[in-house]
Image 1 (spheres, rainbow, N blue to C red):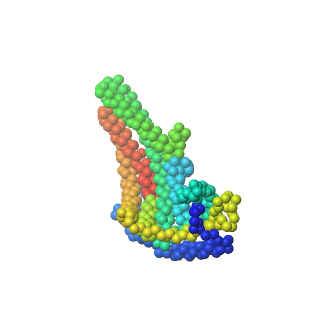
Image 2 (cartoon, rainbow, N blue to C red):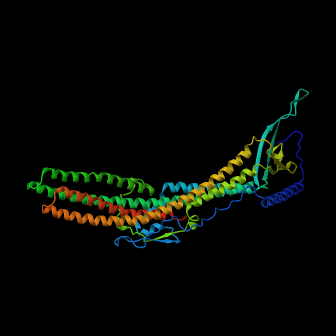
Length: 496
């Protein structure tokens, strides 16, 4: 903008070059001073590594399973779990489903976009370290004052043109900019670990959902076999009733057993449909786009060696723990940012360009103009806002420190629960195996006794119910061992 008494001196090109060289030297010194300046606020120190060597007082899995028909699982402590741990189940269809889910799951797509957003913000914050250079151009019409001379307004309105460059740089003598960059980089790392945690969650959800489908299908198959037995019993009772050896009450009891067992199928089929639909969504598809998948529990190999990292290693590999650590890092840097805001702000700025009253004169040597400005802004009174913001940042730091410790504790508890569940799963399967053997022997004996007329139909039906419960219990125990093993692997799963 051109004033009537122009305060901007016009120099020769050589003089202006000298001025800009001096500014460049001053700016270089300022940048160097900034890079070597002290940084206010606390420096981030990673939390101390736990020194414990186990997850609870009772994690040991027996060396020998209680029953010889039940394979034993052993903990391989201080052993690294494979990144693609689901391959330990030796099921190719499962691996393909997880591959699809990692590529097409919409929650993962959103998490990936969030990571890209965080990285872009971190890159943008890095730009604060450098001088900011802008090109400016303007044209306008302007008038100063309202003096009259001879009936005419003076000075008259005039048109101006300007073109040039502006440079500004804020000295980071207290490290506030460094802390802001550090904070944004920590937040970007947090988003990256959040993505890894989401990937681990999706993979474990796929494994658990596939095992659930296999278990439901096994239960349906078991119920269908039991219904076949119920129909056989009803025929047997009907023959005896027709022969006059039993009463109508026995026939009704057999019919009631068949009807009662039949009611279990619709619920199981509904659960199967819901599990299949959930599986299709996890893989990023609509249920209508995916053909229903069938799984067999026997198609999964139960891993007998269970790699488990020590607690001291778990805190450096679990993505949710690493994400909590980066949140703590960002909160620490935020204290530095809030502290830096209490100090004066020093900004250097310079402009160099052309200004003229006529467009044709814009690039004449006589139209050159420059300015060099140093600006200091210090907070004097803000109603206590800045200090309150620093106290809030310190409180947030305490929150994140407690949050980190809570995440670690919950992670250790999750691993401990999974280890206990693995041990109890073997015990449960052994007990269910024995119960199934006894129930089978009892049912066979009751049927022989009924054919010989030594027992009534109610006793046969009671044995039938016990056998039904034993078969379902055995199927569920088989699935549970696979399920808790997958939970253990997810609990000690490491980040990409």
